[in-house]
Image 1 (cartoon, rainbow, N blue to C red):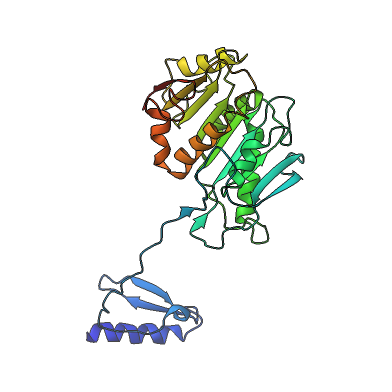
Image 2: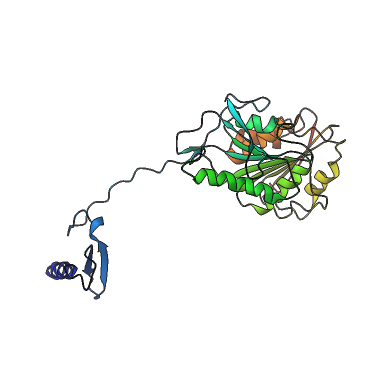
Amino acid sequence: MKTLLKNITIAASIVTSSTVFAQNTIYVCKKDGSYVEYAISDIDSISLIKPALQEQPPVKEKSFFLYGDNVDDNGPLAFNWDENVGPSGNGVVAYPKELSNDPNVLHPVAIFCPGGGETPNSQPTIPKRLASMGFVVYSQPSTWDGNDAKKAFDWLEQMNNDPSARFYGKLNMERVAICGHSQGGVMAEDCANKDSRVAVLMLLNSGSFSHDGATNLTIPTGFITGHTDMAYDNAVGDYGNSANKAPMWLGIKGNEGHGYGPWGGSNCCVAWIRWHLCGETKWQKEFMEGGGKFNRAGGWEVSTKNW
């Protein structure tokens, strides 16, 4: 005890010498002769008795800002549809008019990639439906390059980190969703291969021409097609590749054609994203069990693998 007090006294006296130590620092000598440095400005008090540990409040888990449960129609939230925004300059961001004010309740994030020659305004169903349920959704005319979708995720993340931006601290950017129709599906698939933030993928009437676009994926990946869909071979080929590792679902909707996915199949896409991004496990039986809403009911023919 005397040694400790002596060392503290010596350290304090050394502090007064500006030629050796900084004025705002105290040094405590340990038994091995080494010193522990403390900033005086950080010290409230000194005690030779170890204080009892104070119980820390439990850390509140973050949850999703999510409303409604009827994927066949828009949700209950009014939403904004802001045009000519984003890294492309011609994109749209859809989001609830009333954003979360709880730092532990974050908005889920998704990107929808329209088909080739289409725009967010010509294929608005999925972005609007997701936004009306609490999502922040970005959509822009598609390219073949997933990096263009990745830039859009970067743009949203930048706003999530910018104190002056509308979405500051309101988005869950750790796990995001992407879906796309036709050419946009190829773009979405390529983005999922390049962006580790993507946690779920849905391709609507789409798939790679080489049938190997999903072989490196490990995230839940869904395909919607129909027997008269001109992209039927692309979807079935991607799904059927023996090198696939990801859990996959293939839904063939009877004799539906190439335009089915972003319209009639929008409920399926929304439910898939709510299940795998937001953890709504109630949708699992609708995809995975015979007679489910998206499994052998309503004309669906379903195959699954790697679950």
